[in-house]
Image 1 (spheres, helix red, strand yellow):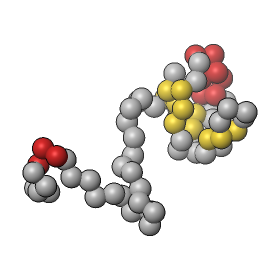
Image 2 (tube, one colour):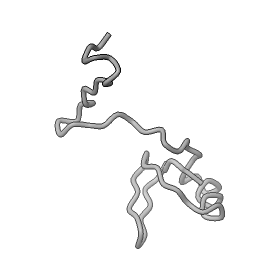
Image 3 (cartoon, one colour):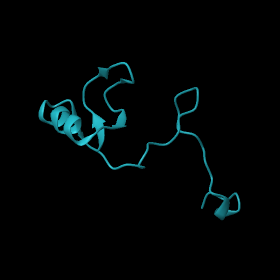
Image 4 (cartoon, rainbow, N blue to C red):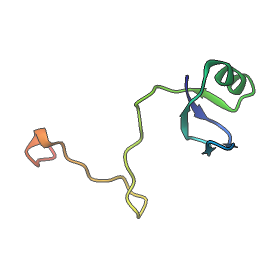
Amino acid sequence: MHLKMTAGLSGPLFNLSPGDEYDFDADEAKRLKDAGFAVDAEPGVQAPAKTKKGKAANVVSSDSGGRAD
């Protein structure tokens, strides 16, 4: 089950911060949601990539021919 963390969580296989998304098995997902450590998230939906300066990357689709209409 794909979850978005509302609290930090670390273990031997991961180190997650609030806002991070991760796939958990159903039992662990239920436990984390019941404890208020995570909420459901849609898999594959991600925030825009960040540049080193912390601004969203300027990405133009190849379908637009390089124009940002």
